[in-house]
Length: 86
Image 1 (cartoon, rainbow, N blue to C red):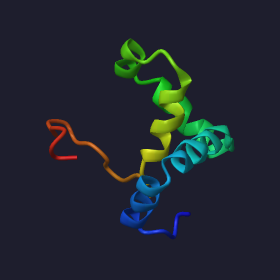
Image 2 (cartoon, rainbow, N blue to C red):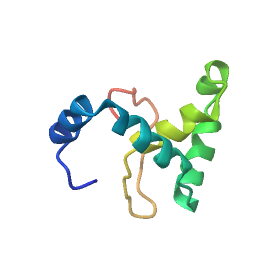
Image 3 (spheres, one colour):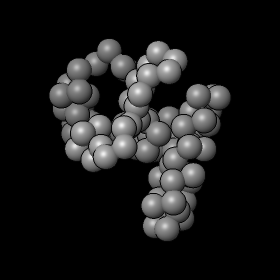
């Protein structure tokens, strides 16, 4: 499914609404160490903890995270950076 263009995927889902529900259910059942790591990290964010009461949010949100690779010792955030700088 990752090879399907986003627009085509949404066209399929609009034509077959029940397929999105079934795919989401299967995706939320999928479990691997990387997914669990991302869910664990999300659960440590205080902002979410105040509003979110179900694991479904974390399981779905982790699919929207992108992965970035950095060399060891790279500066990720400098003192004085704003969120717009990152």
